[in-house]
Image (tube, rainbow, N blue to C red; front, side, top):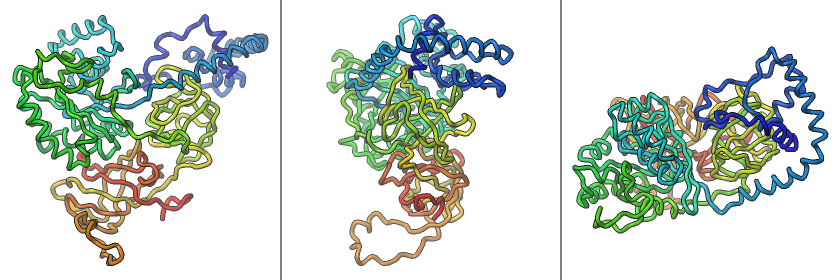
Length: 544
């Protein structure tokens, strides 16, 4: 840490350019920083410790010059040592206090059918909470007008790349941050188009609460809700991926065909409630409906005027989000952080959401499944450096002791004392949703497994038993007869089976760590089953 403070003091004059703090989703094309094999060891050390130095990779010809510069810096560091000691301690207190703020942190994923208005609603939230200024909005309005798509300008806040703007479809999961009175939120704007469901899965698997956006416009709700629409699939996936609470916002209520009609609102609610129940949501406790207009921002930050909509006297969106209660995670538990992305930046930086435990600077951790011992040399929360981060935070962790190419999305950062298991087969309880027309679900069935940030091809090795939910309640466990193993199961069945994957994956039993124990199976772009991990091989063994 002292190194960092000194480097900071010295590089104070040379502030890193603003591009250096560009959101890391845009960093995929960032220049990888390689340290030449012939570079001086001092230079390597400086690259490691200069966490706050400007992110400008030095070209290799000037390595000698750089080495000289490093020597100079080191000599001045020694003279600065005493002066900055006190400053570092003060700094430490400041950072600690930042983390202990009373605001909790939640991840909200926006889901729903394509064109329901997810990105527009997300953009409007950012605008209303002061994250985007008027000038930017004016720029986007002009840009949207030039593409003769006037109503898309709010979506441009969330959809940042050109392809998304031209087609008006979200592809990647957009990220942004905003705050309400008691909560800090990270918005995850998931794509609604069925081609991009795998991206939506990666977004929803990081979320604590979901906002399901439904379009009230005539025809649009029906398209999204009927078979093949994304509204149904998204709700099922959200439930499977652990989104416990759902806010159903009925958007586009200001549309000429709707005009804040109570009949239309009630019709949509009446259709959605039975479906949400069948997906496993407790509608009374975990779901809240409310009407909004994402484009003009009605009923979002403040309650709407009776003159706009006389029949609605419920809360606005910000109030609902602020009041939502989610189960607390264990900050003292073993560390579990599924890695969703990684890049090079004077060391290996991994990104993800801490599912359990607390990560502190200086901690020694394990990257599983390849058992690399690593040390945490830096922690970033959004754009700010912190000393520690607890459960449910989205963090960027800088590690030493592992190369960037040795880390893959789907690996898990875990504590050394209680590491996550790495397995190639496991027993799961599956619910079959909808098989492809001519497929039978039997041993030998192949699909793509999505579990936290892992995407792996898998095969069903054997079906162990089919569970009949009706009989399960009535049957006396003592009189239970051993069942014959089913040869195949049909749509809607619940079955316990053994699943095998080609590579080692890090998972936990659902009963121990729900976040690392729930998954979906997909084939040919359709979700065919959802499930949870019931049993894993004994510790240290990848198979049973």
